[in-house]
Length: 416
Image 1 (cartoon, rainbow, N blue to C red):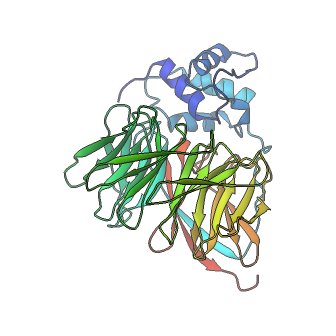
Image 2 (cartoon, rainbow, N blue to C red):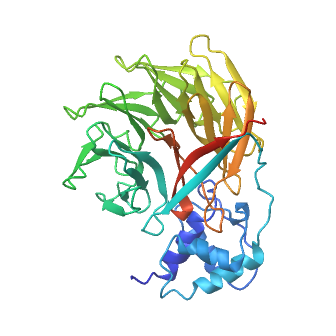
Image 3 (cartoon, rainbow, N blue to C red):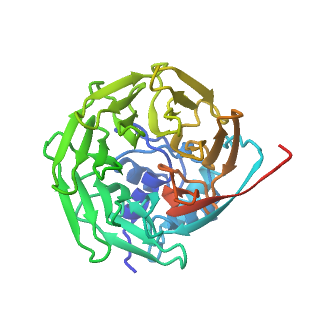
């Protein structure tokens, strides 16, 4: 195996262990042997991070976390880094979720993807039953055979840095080139990759992609503030800019009438996109601190969304514009992130809790239930996209520890 330099080791540690701060902001670390080593590498990372916002670990568990990011062989400095972090950032429960008991039982099956440090994310089921994921920092996409556990990774063109992966009806696997402004298509049978480039230099960051029922691909471009569509038959890409400044379109779904709905991660809105004209209409949501990572659509057409900025779950009536919200169990700082609806029951996660909590909400009873999401012996998760399989299982992930997880509802108590 390749030997990593200490700059690679510490840089990856600082970038992956904890949530990001604003660019240019520096973490303040306590004095001690190892501080200079950790601090120097953290502040040289593309985004500085605040280690204090982790849940803290023992030395062994800091080493385990680092081991999910890099190959430790030939890097003895990791002992010094782990010892420093364990001394100054030991385990604590200040950001533990408020777990809510309830009538439903679940089981979780997990896979650890092969390449360290890749930030495995956005698992999805293909038509043949295989599970695919995007390894964003590893610049790859991968496939799991759920029957055998066998995994295969496919390297992508330089600097693609895929943000999501989505199969089409024919079994081709599409990804968003978040860093090289492309949409890519992989033919799993041949390994051939076809790239579709953005027609506008302002369209820099394809983000989340879905296929509409008519076979057209729709995608968001978060920081470009755009919605895009791609016709796989012709390769033509069209773009529309959101009329809401800095709305930062994020998650996207199609409703039963063929319209597209996109979440606003930068403003208190969701966006409706006309599939024919690409006209974008914002629907304003209450409170200026509302931001929405992702949304989904129930069988009755209502839009359910995570209010990430305020720690709430919300419902929008697209006909009247009426909104109702519920406080998430772990409170206003829980940062709900991913969401999926299965049999009109809402599932989402609280991403700023450690462990990351999986939450179930039954709209009929308006009751919550939640579970901790496993991540080995460390809680460095985050599920960034939740999608359902054709038989109603739920696919989640823990990006920092390379885990892809399949959630199955195993029972329901008659006493509740």
